[in-house]
Length: 424
Image 1 (tube, rainbow, N blue to C red):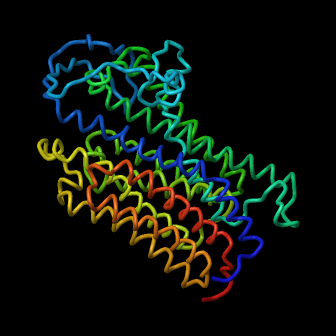
Image 2: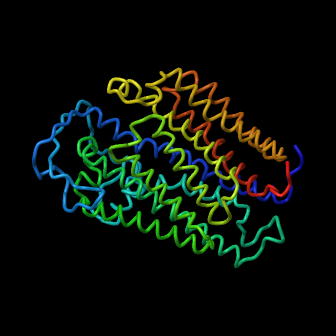
Image 3: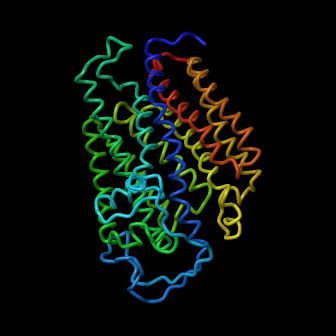
């Protein structure tokens, strides 16, 4: 491929610097899917019968705020699968795990820690990465002092863009992802009361009224920040606000009945891919630029299809229980052999299409870089995923997905620095 320009070298150096973040993205994306599907699967393993009562064990019911009502019934349950107590991590990380919202956490009575735990900060990372990719795709993000470009050293402009990007990340992470995780815990509270009674809501560490307040505070606060970003960016149409409203709606129907998208393999997995790849990309790009070309919408959607493939990997180990209970995960619907090819195909074919598109717009360097990042993924699919997706799911995710993450960033950098005035 042709030599990299100074600007391209600068941009690719950002990707190298971001390596640690990429691996964190992979880990957290796996956590996202695990957090939001484990409870649903377990709920299907429970025989439930309702009887009138106001004394739910371990749950402090107070208020009801539409559309998050508190039921006035007690749900008696018979558990068919075993449950275990919370096992705190023995390596001294239990306190940190509690703040991040992951397993092995310590218990606490400090309200701010409990509220933070409900938002699962570990799951914010993919959204922050997505906003960064969107900013790169805009081609309009400025450094405070760029060592590669003497024309990009406006400290004030760079500081302003850094602050604007930070606010966009706060919107996507703590507020709207926090809202998503809190509402998911809310709708799984009866299930968690049986399987994970130590969690904040079923343990009574935080009342239902306080949880509902947090849901509304995060949602309305996030929408307020989104509108503020629109004003800051000078948008005539509130693009960031519209994206935030749409994403919040998807989060609601993902967790809440009657739709509850996470019970359907296609809808649930794609909703995750879209929410954690497309929406933050569009947010970041809208803050720093415009979404005025179809390709700005199409590329993130394609990567969301790849995200669907990532989500499928987490379904393989649950296939027997899902099949017995009638849940329509893709491994159940198509069998392990069918689903593993759907998984590999959705990840690989979509990226190859993106690489072909980059080549078609006369960006052979970026097309070659993306192809180079796809090849290791194909290798790990051939050696880990396809031979045994059940046994190798974690190893495959850890080995292959960093290359996907860097591919997303490389694509965003290409889009941001392509000369669209040149007709192909």
